[in-house]
Image (tube, rainbow, N blue to C red):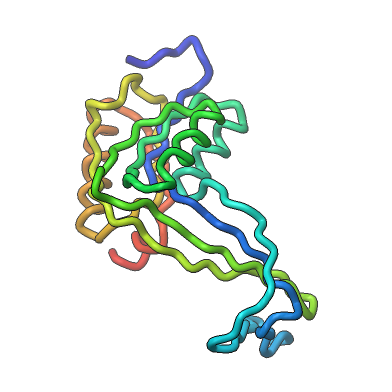
Length: 196
């Protein structure tokens, strides 16, 4: 049931994971090639090892970032996502709860969470990043019966997994939204954009 006496309630549906940031120091075995071009490249020496500064680990992912942004803007937010059962699970749950976000998490006890390592480069007037991403191996689905309060709107974001997984979930979310007359904003990930 929708509560119209309070601020709008957003339901974000989408992925969450762990992002580990490492800033490569300039003295390492890497260089920026063609810095004057529109798309310069970073060249890493194979087998090389260089110094880096660890920036830290953070909760990330399209769904998590959307939910966090809405919560910081003062919205009441719920986040429906999928979690594996590895060392990142507790960290992710705590970070979501610290932001005052209601968590609906389907947990796969045999699955793993999404993990990314973000390499930060800064040299020759260029600051950028490279993301090495490992998508978690977990079961993904959507069960509208788990939603305890009908949201005022839904943000449907990137969902990992195989195309048949996220396509099925997108369909279930859209069916739920039609049944409950809930507006939906869609922010697809690259997998959704490239696999039509």
